[in-house]
Amino acid sequence: MSNEPKAFLLEGQGVVDMLVLIWLDGFTSGASTALLTALEGIPEEAADELANRISDRIQQDPLAMLEVEREVKERLTGDAVDGSGRTITAVKP
Image (cartoon, rainbow, N blue to C red; front, side, top):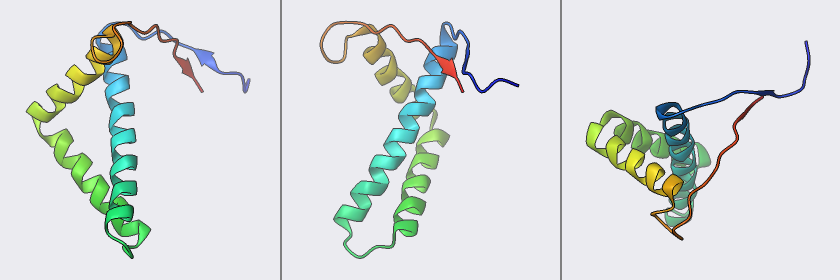
């Protein structure tokens, strides 16, 4: 078995679905950091738990998930920031 990464191709909605999961990971990490900063003295585990609960609520709300997907699609097309789209090469570890 090789340790070299295996390339795989995601097309269409598969790319968006994967990037939504990455977006949610980043959101959860950022929320945990914000909680640690805003609530001085809160244990890291408590901040992580609260951030996970927020993320879970977002994932359970179909309208919130549509908004996250819209944000990801805007970023891919370049409509969100600088008007240029992005080409993504995905590599599976």
